[in-house]
Length: 352
Image (cartoon, rainbow, N blue to C red; front, side, top):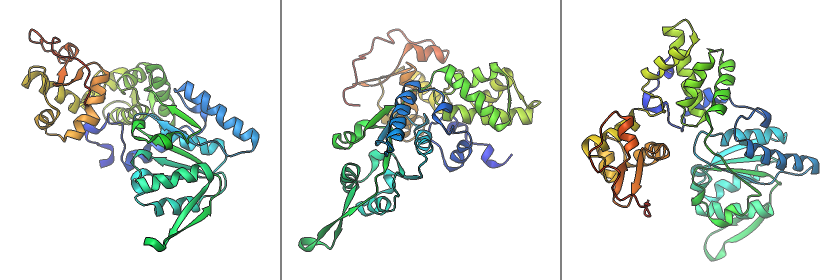
């Protein structure tokens, strides 16, 4: 196997993906809404929007997809383009630093094209204001000159469908959110849907997978298809090198143990955070910066990568006094909590 097949174990259960991972995932993406597992409510609603547009012979309404990384926002954008038989243009908010960048993209679109804008909440404010006009009136104002002599020249652009994706919908200004005709909130997947996804992906990559192995991979995937596919590829590699190539439950468990992904999907960083809280700080409360230093990670990594999953699993609470490990965290680590754990101030964290 190449170096690409030996990822850092700490990245296996991260919902984000690097270019190599995206290339591997692209072959596993469903291409139609009928193939899109999970998110049944979103699929039904979006299917209705697209079918109505097709029957009218019109361009589909703008679509906003919101939810954590790895749940299928990019895949849905590709499906929208495929269902509408339209070309797809892809960009991201951080790449559009000036209004001129956006004007160049919009002026190059063709009638009916789907423009997928990932991380739309990170777009610059001047570009954002230009997008308002483009979404509503399908024109942009190109400013020529500087200072008092500057002139705005209106430029008509073809009708298009904007598909915006965001992990933080709360950061989008109201005027931008209101211009989307359909907004979808993607939720974490349940185990049954992830099992179907694992089986489908295994067939596509030629992995021989038992039902029990699919269950094992699905329950460690943190409710995220991207992580499920990533773990499947690593388990397949383990089966090819250290077993007979068939992925059984025992093989899956051995592979995931090697990559330090436990029964609930916690990885080395997650367990490091919990161990630091319980062993070094008595379960908390402890400040985020202190916690990050104790595990030799950046504050942002702990807050944005480890903490959301630990909170969702009920292992960690955010309180006004700091982060607190719950009794469930002590139990998961096999530790005995000191007397009084669980009695700390657990009122909501009003300040993040």
